[in-house]
Amino acid sequence: MTFSNNRPDAPLAPGMQDRLSVVVQLSMLAAGEPARFGPGTQIAIPTASTREAEDWIFRVVSEEDLDLPGGRVRALKLERLPRKEFDQKVELWLAPGKDYAPVRLRLTNPDGGSVDQRWASTDRS
Image (cartoon, rainbow, N blue to C red):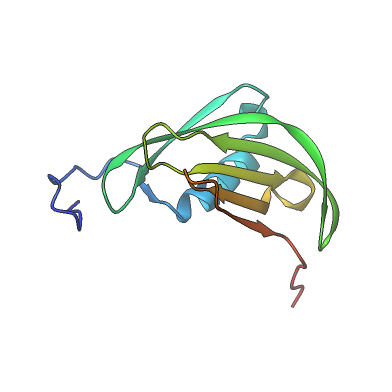
């Protein structure tokens, strides 16, 4: 892989994801092997950003009941804590009752600013 910031190239690791597809990959892994996602478990996903390629480590936190615009849902919370100066904190909630679809995603920047996406509806067509 070649990075836009002129860092040295990196090999493309098996299972490598970009920062967006890592959410879908975690959803599919949880749906395929839910027993692997017990509280305290760590899941490593090789992830490429604009600056580097490294394993993103997500920790399974717990199941929570969420009141979202689309309704009340039980969801499994995973989080990736920042490891470097400019890393974002990533929090992801997957709903077992909705085939482990991501129902909430919160990205928090080092300065405290955040983006919080919440499930509002399901297109049934």
